[in-house]
Amino acid sequence: MNTETIPILCLRLLDIPLTDNPDLRKLLLVGAKDLARKHQARFEQAGLSIDLFHNEQVIYSAIQLGRYQKAPEWTAIGEEACRALSLWYEIFRIEAAQPLRNTVEIREGYTPEFLTYSKRYKVGSLLISDELAVELNVMTNKFARQDRLEKYLYGNLQTFFTFIGFTYDKAHDFLKITVEEADIHNRSHKVYQGQKKTALKVRFTCNFRLPQHLKLGQSTSLGYGKVTHW
Image 1: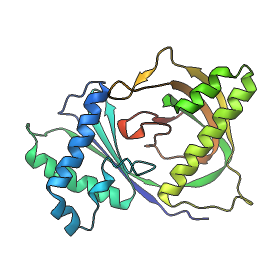
Image 2: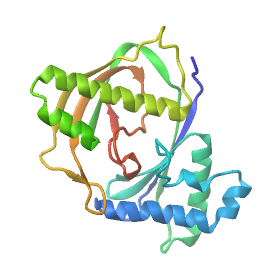
Image 3: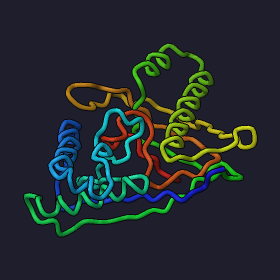
């Protein structure tokens, strides 16, 4: 089993106002990539790829934009992504339209591991694929819906494991996810440019320790799907 510690960096730029408008979030994501592209030589000199920022080809986003108390919150997962975000912030501070006097920096050393018990988690806005939304809409059996959601979360976690390079012997360790509660939001969530996704409020247990800064589901790069420990 691979249990290497994964560095995670979270920057909360409290001087910058950010509404909950997804189109604005999209602009900030694109703008971050544009700033990195403008200084691509510095990133290349540091051995960093600017495609860590807003690259639609990446299955799980290495650098994500979220929202914390009406301010942007950037999260980088993995050593290379953390270095790239730090370099980007160094450049951004110089070129920002306003002085940045209040930035919170949080560093997490995350070690993935199976637990001997089931830990409880919840996601306030888990955005799901259109295909899954259609499936759930025609399911009348509560237990069938629960089973389908558990498989969806399982797939999301496997994608995350692949992203961080975590491997384990599936014959020896079994990833168990149990959905305790799942409610569909009474409205679709606008993602950007008029696109909307079905969102769920989900509470589940899992026999695996997840990081404090993790997002699951669709549009994680825009901050949706934040996992909370409880």
